[in-house]
Image 1 (cartoon, one colour):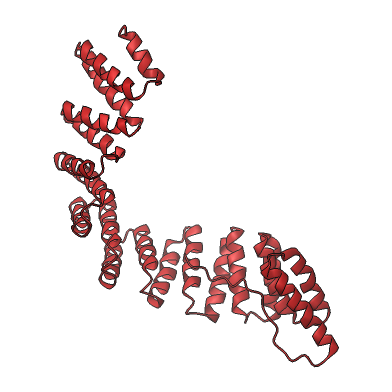
Image 2: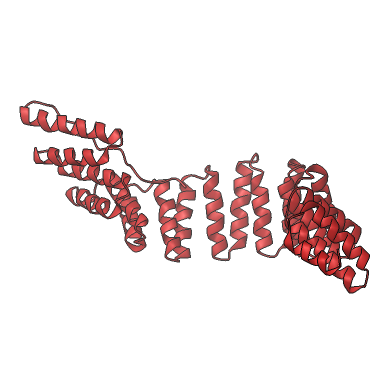
Length: 343
């Protein structure tokens, strides 16, 4: 997320006609140089000296607040920002925005929200301010407030892809899946190169239990990036939720043809094959996962072995446990199971 903060030191602009003005101007310059070098504590001391010599107290308070902020001394920063705001009768937008940011850091969200509203009256086109306001509303559970703030940011900058995702999430939070879909579709129309929009749309449909639409969206993405194994995995997952297990198994098998080391896909395939009694396929999938070191393969082998024992096929159970031990020789549970079988 972009932030609406301004943490550069304020610079006083004036003519240097007298020794006194020259004096606090020089002090300010030295303080600003220390700030830029990250020497914030020393900068604060000089800023305080500068105000004693007649420097603008609003600029000094702002710079001191920025220094405290950089040192993560947020209560002190908040107090200094409030001074800067008061000195300028609330007209210095950077101070108000930064004060809001400090309230957020302090988890004082109602104060943060109020400060952002105050700042955005001064700079209503500040996109980052609206986004951060939306985040603050989310922290207090005000989903409507969050949506309105992010909608405003979206109106100001529809070209920002990240805002498209945030606005969609805000609509999902309120259960408005149709609006969430429309926002993503609009974003994809404006940015056809952003294939992830299609993937995200698949996620949105799946969340709303629209499994066929979800699978169609994933397939649309795969039409552009056919070897994207992560999208293929999502497709397999939603197919299982839609009770299309055998199609999902074919998708998982395709993943493993492209990337044999994708052990999670191998485990997924093994579990589906085991549940549907395709035991040879399950064993080969678990072994593929074992070759990649995925410990979940142990449970796959053991489940198959326990089934064999229940059917009094002890030699088959031993074979499966020994196969597992080949890949996991130090697993104590496998050793215990084999001991029980007399091996």
